[in-house]
Length: 149
Ligand SMILES: [Zn+2]
Image (cartoon, rainbow, N blue to C red; front, top):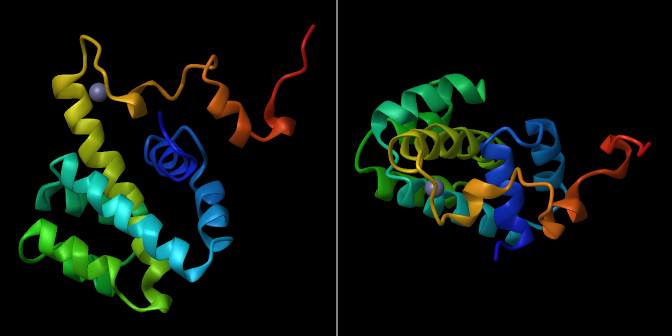
């Protein structure tokens, strides 16, 4: 069972939804919800075993400058500690933090998936592409659905 927030975050990270959609969703949240979304992203990145090598690639993918605060934080110190700092950055850093952590999740979870999940796995978030999942339909925009025959 994957709740809507986790669904949006993982689909954005895996490129199953355009990042522009993820950003629009993030911006529609309240301040508390944005903080919650960033906390979850940080948790997912930790679970995915994100490394500083992944961070370098994530910064490039996210299209933010290596000198922006979340990127600077991500490149130094212990990953878990730095992620917690990023989650708690002020409001004006949150969108960049979101883009960066979505990219980091994409990189680190993608690596883990390729390494450990190639023969199938029980990670619910690795099976989000399946059209039979009713929860997917809820957030898929109707105008993107092809018309039936
Ligand atoms: Zn998996």
